[in-house]
Amino acid sequence: MNIQMVDLKGQYLKIKEEVDAEISKVIENTAFINGPKVKEFAQNLADYLNVKHVIPCANGTDALQIALMSLDLNPGDEVIVPAFTYVATAEVIGLLGLTPVLVDVEADTFNIKIDELETAITGKTKVIVPVHLFGQCANMEDIMLFADKHNLFVIEDNAQAIGADYTFSDGRVQKSGTIGTIGCTSFFPSKNLGCYGDGGAIFTNDDELGQKIRMIANHGQNKKYFHKFIGVNSRLDTIQAAILDVKLKHLDGYGKARFDAAMYYSENLKDIEGVTVPVLSEFSSHVFHQYTIIVENGKRDELQNFLNEKEIPANIYYPLPLNEQEAFKNISKVKGNLKNTQILCNSVLSLPIHTELTKEQQNLIINTIKQFFS
Ligand SMILES: *Cc1c(COP(=O)(O)O)cnc(C)c1O
Image (cartoon, rainbow, N blue to C red):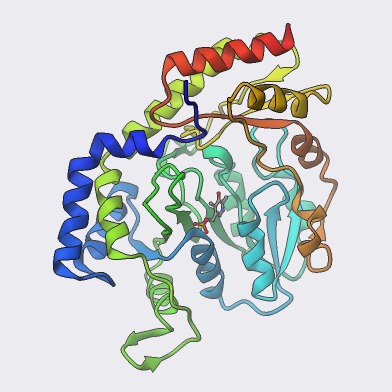
């Protein structure tokens, strides 16, 4: 049995005809840069998310950088970000001469700890960047209340949760990435909505910001050769947009397949002593970009080796908190303690999860984990 963390080939084969035809069309038209498919896909994604502006760009890291560039920040301004995330979230903050202020995450949802916001805020704080880690939204209602009270921008790092629904206490439902000032996503191949190369997008409901972001992503111009801002060159290839437009129609189905696989794991792993299965929050659906368990008593590395030896992949996202990364030592600040982050880096283990995972494969993985603990 060949088990992979993600099965991109199996997923492709199911939509091969349509994808191949769309790729051929782009090549026939040679509209490789900013072809009509880019606009079409952006509009379809905007409709799906129910957001006013979707600005495609080259990758998720660029999306975060361009979002920050649009907010008129100054060097030394502080951006609150969880210490337990992928490096890109905080990297762009440092790159722009801003200060990442690292805070702890909740022990159960792995998302930014709301209580820490009050500890982290200073006169220089301008932005909060919550990350919807592993496919489930951070507590956006409380984050937005806090941000409004203190006049802060919110940039959602939605690279792992596209398609997730957030439910407010009054019953209102909004798609992840459309709640903050700006939302960012990645179309990296293994993401829930992935293309066949690099890609990303930025979302906002603010017309003025939408236009500015579009300009920044295009050398700061909206009229060719007239540059209002210092920008970047960050585009989504037409071929990638064509592929994404096909895959967007399957996104909800993909999310459901991932969720069902996750529930099957949880049902079968929840009673193992020393293992904690993912928690479902009351305010967000979960699209399971990763299925991540907590392995107690220092057994995580041993379990990972045991699985890997039996050709079952299992990865650690993330082994080292941002505050301990050499690149961040001199440019970031830590606020409060990072106790949960510390514990999670030593105990999380992500199991294979994707749209093509079979019960047989899951049974093998489950039984191997049970064997390890028996
Ligand atoms: C993947 C990812 C990114 C970066 O996306 P790229 O397209 O690889 O640049 C940023 N943040 C998070 C949380 C991610 O998972």
